[in-house]
Image (cartoon, rainbow over all chains, first blue to last red; front, side):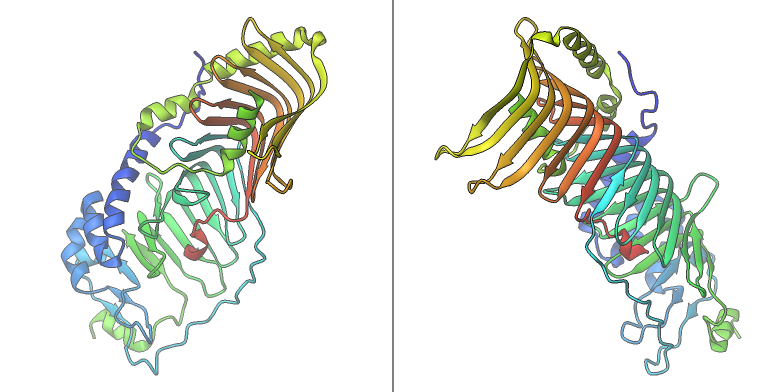
Length: 248
Length: 172
């Protein structure tokens, strides 16, 4: 019996993990459920859980939805570091620079790889080696990609493994694993061993978020970063913010 | 035989299965196992050596609607069936599916193929393209199993779809 020598090592455990994750995610698709879900997966987040539930660490100014935490940094919460909170008055909140919207042409998306397997019974597409997804809204490179389907062409889950790079004209993300779970409407970027997952704004004033795990809730546009290092462009915070940060 | 091949191949892009708990260990093993592919490759080579008596320019309807209108047709430049082994070999294969008004709804073009009717598995050594709706799948070296509803493209796979419905664009 011959076998592909590059059988996906380690994917078995990951697939099982995703199964468990999906079950939890389906029940807890709202941002409020994040800490509980994270608690099951990582003791680092568990440590920070009470503080996360009480107050957001970094709260970006949102004129309408000022109460929503935009970026939560679990590690700092655990260490009880001061909180950065943007001034709330809606009238004076800095206007977000709107990105020039790219008009979508509806062109076809193309996926290529070295080999591909499709299991209709299980609803799984598996792309192996040098996977490249060329979608109108983003491009993705990865060593391997599993697509879990539900119904006709409906992606239920997508798992990209190894040297994952996501890019479009505005931002880029690099990580070791990227998991998209439709039921929870979230994308999770996992860092490689000894490295970090990175989400970078490619614009002139762009910032960078790195961490062990970056979770992005697509519906609420909230981000949770574990062991984060966040670089923001100069001028992103006002003098008042610095005072709050330094506790003065 | 080829009708089954056509149906399965064209359904590659149109997945209809609900996801269920499965044995990932076994699934990964199945993906990596090339035993049946190697066997079919050997069968193809044997067929090629004795394909002198193959029928040429075959064109036949393979499926019909209840009112008699043609649902799908098969064309093959060459085809031969080996009754002793249950192996069917063909070259220059085109399968087309039609709606009730006669418009083409799906097509499959394969350079060549060999199908084992007993094991209901097949192998396309050359290039094949299947189109159905807004999905086009192409590649070389394609293994398929009707029983397992499993397809593996071993070289140059390419899937083109209108949208793959993954919201990575919003993350970015």
